Image (tube, rainbow, N blue to C red; front, side, top):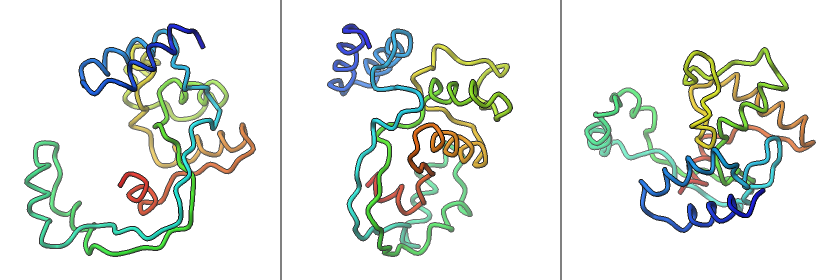
Length: 170
């Protein structure tokens, strides 16, 4: 953790301009993001127990499909979100930040037979996206990552349920 990286992080967290955040994020990826310690659980946020309204009302389906048509959303995907309903949730913890490519690389170094994200060109670690969220991993690979992190930290780690995710993101 260098003073320069900490200063970059403060600028990143204070900026609301997307292009500036992207630039600062790229610099953090190269210089080292002080928030990221591969295999550590130092960014958990406690979410209190409560009731969450999840899903959507049937009357909103067509509007949602139209709004997201440019990214390929189809009606059948949205139909599974009906009806909007309330669920009760126990308190839980969730990471403040998504898993990064750099954190996933630490997992791959410990578990060389694990699935490499298909978003990594030619299966090579994308250095310029080290600080970006890892994506294009299967559910089973995500579960393997959670099992690895559980073993590494001694704390149970798992993916949040859909309801937990919606509640925490809301």
